Length: 396
Image (cartoon, rainbow, N blue to C red):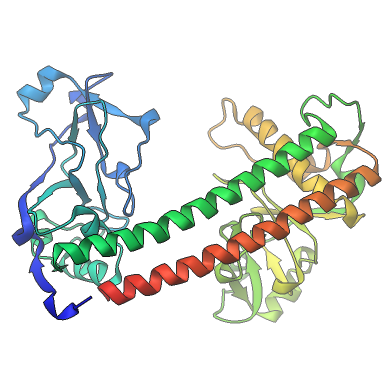
């Protein structure tokens, strides 16, 4: 591919048209009619449907406000964060559509392949250029005029098509592998139901015990700043709910405290194979295992620490809580703005408790699934690295 033939032009120069959407206020909306596409429907390089939250205007409103209709194949760019300038290609849909004022509607000349432009919007060069043109003290945005001035590469169309085919292929490979991870999770859940039945109804009649009866402790942490300890750049790992990723603790998302602080917070020092449960906020019920790779570590008051007497129960208890706790939180949340779990509620939480031998069989099956998931995750990371390097090659 001969990069010397690439040209660079302003976005406004490669468009047949670039327009903003329509100013639609809440009183203009209707239960049905012409679909209103909003900034929330524009993902990073993808259209996000959100059909359950769809908004509409009537035909009469469309005519009264002289709205601009949009169509499948149009490129939409969000002029608001996060991030500013993200773009997608609008799919063909059965609804007639318009878009909101903070979305720009771009229709390209035949020198630009729309999907090529969308791939470019995911590059660091594009985002750097967008941020240079952004304005606003509290909430950044980019005006349509400034958006038109953003520079984009314009290789020969044949080169654009080859680049799109390559990047699409890599993205599809990642999506397929991510789909595999979801299927593994479904398999783990299916195995649980096959072996133990529905945890809500206890249809197999297992013994029932309280969670507190099989734990050495159920406690929670403390936020260091309430005791006068600041967070530091380096030191003992400190776990927040934001660190929970796919049932584990992501080392890249840890904060840190001093050793002095860790000693002062001795009650919430973590141990290997502790189970952490979020007990407050929007992510209530989210869980993660602790392993030796992050120790020594501590946590805050939004995380409950469940420390089992018998570690062989861990996989079963995690799966049971994942399925049953979600149901109970939903019940708790009825009529409540934001439910919270107390340590007392966790200690009194009733567990259907099958024989240990059966729990161990389940743990072995789940461990085999986890091993396969790790291989898939490694493959995703390798494919993502290749995608990133190709993006850098073409755009940065």
